[in-house]
Image (cartoon, rainbow, N blue to C red):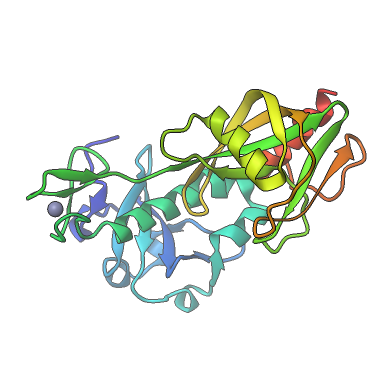
Length: 267
Ligand SMILES: [Zn+2]
């Protein structure tokens, strides 16, 4: 990080800064344009919202948590981060998603959770500080596991009971306090579909900004047990032969899609 503060004041703004603008959690987008320059914007409107530094290499990128919806002034639309993901996976996962998480962190830590005092940004690191308590609030990442269960040439795919999607995907869950990711894999698979697994193997990971997960991708082998679905989590689950899979998530977008692709390539 540079010596610029992470939370900027109007006087910190520079002529070549670039902006991603959020209004009530949505992004201001015009066609393919989601990064704005000072020339596009009314600086008086801009500085009414919070200005959070996202990246500071070359021309700085700043996330603006706007107080007013000025998308119409820019002839632009308000778009959810999730819907932006469909056509721009790299952009969302690397830039817009990070900006969105930083804006959310800043909004949600304006006051100390212990004493209720107003927090202030630290100048030396990305943290909000409560001076009376000497507590620092950093942006929080929530680790999750996502796991593809294999049984010889078959994989277990499930449809979520909560997400309204047509995809059959891997099982996933948050890591609980005190667990290793491998223990989470074993627990989640048992809780969601009633199976025991073995040879839990880490494959790859991905930042998933909905709202702030770190997805750790695993492949595990079926050990024993019969499918018993957890009704409030899993609408449908079954074994599918590799090469004859139903509708699965795109490998360009999600670690689930990449795990399925990996299994297909490593039969
Ligand atoms: Zn405090």
